[in-house]
Image (cartoon, rainbow, N blue to C red; front, side, top):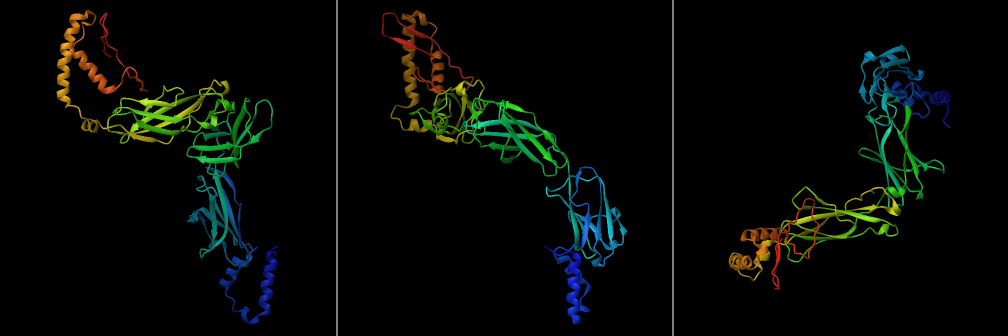
Length: 433
């Protein structure tokens, strides 16, 4: 245990008497330095020590010197966070006490408190105090919770109003079973950009509602959020779909096939997964969504640009776990998969067929003669013309679909169906879409 101040001073004096040759040579500055460095010896004291104050309030503090220093209070000055304060804010109460009056204090600039220091004339720090200036906590809001694969329970919340209390504030997430059980506290906290979060790792009860709330406390007051009630099975989310693959479909230059695997963590739960896809071009920033997939694990994307690289992501929503009627929570998006559609120029360049212009001209002549024959022998299709055939060719070039092919299409895609004719008593049939 450190000796009291008077014992230290007595030891110094006895040590000086035993060495009379050096006692008269000990400068006053060295004595002051010893007094400042010796442990357990207070050279000055600031009162009050480490006060907690509300923003906008005032403070009167005093710095009282130890008699051993041999200093006068009028030679001292004050600093706050290293900035020297105006001499008009303090006055010498006595020869060994200097007071200061601070008004309309702002919030503390750091969580550990603002440093109020008393200095000697040479700039040495004689004493210090930490000022904690802030506000009571406000009510936590936007409390939401989710369960990852029904194995834990995580919650996040934000702070209403300005949120910043400027002093240390403790947030505690509390929970309990609605009809029985004791109150528990979450222990795994983390900070987010717009609030806080906590993950409950204890054993989670299923089929039983929880009551959850947040309490905020600091040295100036406390506040509590509204209590929310939930069943874990209603807030289950899962990992993003795994093994997402994107591949070409033969030589079709405007389509790609997406395949993925269902989340393995939920294989033991009774639920119907719902999937959503989004895709974009490599040089584009806007995603297009396909959300009418249901519980399939593959989908064909149509209407794409030939010779273009596309990025695709998939996410999952485990709907109706054990009969839950809640809409479910979407997982994060999967890692993007990429593939390119075939280039139309390369496909044509690698073909051994006649030139497109020559082939089309011959085909148009044959079809014109054929349609004339159809008008004469099939009165049910008298409205057909070469213009209708041109429209069909344009549609076919854009969609590349046949009667036996199906594809996932974004909302708003319309497929028109035209005329279907069959001459009675013959094997000839014509279908125009």
